[in-house]
Length: 478
Ligand SMILES: [Zn+2]
Image (cartoon, rainbow, N blue to C red; front, side):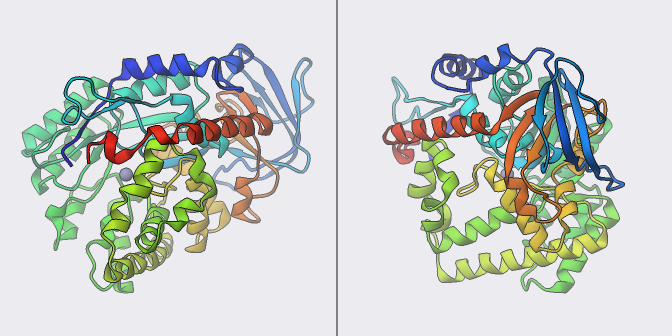
C-alpha cells in the first residue's frame, strides 16, 4: 500500500468534544457532572478480591468514595447511594494486555493531494465497547501522540473509558515510524520515547539482534519494561533472544514461528526459555483463532454480534480488504489451524512451567472487537487448561503487577482504585459468567447496565447509519 497515517491529537480531541456532548444519551459529560466524591455502597455482595490468597468475602458491603474503595465492611454510611449486590459477584476491573486503538486522523494525500479525506475517531465511541465489557485498563502496543489525548480525556473524566498504558514501538528496516538499525540508534530511540512520555517500549520484528539487545538494555537502565515480537533475526537461534530477554512476549506465535512440526518438545523448549529468563507471555490465542476462521470464510465476522460496535472504517476493512481471507489457500488455512491447536498446548505447558500469562487480544486485528474479545480470550485460556481463577488473575492482578500499577488496582481492597465489575453470576464457577455484567465502576464512577446498554445501542446505530461513508479501499487509496 502506498498510503500513510498521520495522527493529530489536537484535532482528535476537538472532534471528541464536538461529538460527545449532544449525541450520546449517556454521554461522559452528563455522568461527570454527577461524579464528584459520590459515596456508593454495594451491599450483600460476594467479593472475589483476586488477591493471591484466593480469599472470598461473603455478604460484604463495599463502600466507595471518590475514586477509592474505602471499606469492605458495613453498614452503608449515611448518604451513600446503595447498589444491591445480593446474588451478585464483584471482581476487579479487567485488563486487556494487547490492544491497538484507532487514534487521530487518517489521511491519504497521494489520492487526494489538495484536500485529503479525513476520518476522525470519537474517543467515547472507541472506549464504549471496553467499558461495556468490564475492561477498565488497556495496554496500547502501538501508541502514537493521539493516544495521549485519548488517555487524558479518560483520566480527566470527559470520556468513560479504560486507563491506557502506552508503549512506543521501535522497529528496524527502512520505513516510517520509530526506526533503529544500530545499537546507538536503538538507545536514542528509547531515550526519545521516554522524553515524549511513553511508559513502555515495544520491540518489533525487523530489529537486528544487537539493536534489539541494546534497546532492552537502555529501557531497563531507565526503569522501563519491554514487550514485543521476537525479531526475525533470531530465526534458527531463538535462544539468542533470551540472552537479553524481553519482559513480556506479546503473542504465542512469536514462539510458534520457531517450530515447523508443532511438536510437544518444542512447546516444552519454548516455555522453558520463558521460565528460565523470567519472561511473561501474553498468548493472544483468540487472534490466531480469528485469523484461522477468516482464512476459511468471513461469515464469522458478518455473524458476530460484536461487529456492530466496530468503527465502520474497520468494518469495511475487515470485509473488503481482509488479508487473511484474500490470500487464503487450503495449506495456509491448515497451517493456521495447526497453530491454534499448538497454542492451546503451549499455554498448557507454560502453565505447568510456571510462566506468568496475561490476557490480551490484539484488538483491531480483523475480527477482534474491543472488550468483547477479552472474554473470548479468557474462555480460550480456560479451554487450554487454566482454572477459572487463574484466567481471571491473568486479566486482573497479574497484568497490574506487570504494568507496575498493582498498588493502585488489580485487586479489590481498601485503598485501591474503584475499578470494579459487578457480575450476575460467579465467574469462578464458569468463566463465561464474566460476561454477565450488571454494572461497572471506573475511577469510582458507576455505570449501570441500562447506561451501558444505551451507550452500546447508540454506538451501533451511528455506526450503521454512517457505514456507507467509510469505504476502506477508497479512503486508504488501495
Ligand atoms: Zn498487536
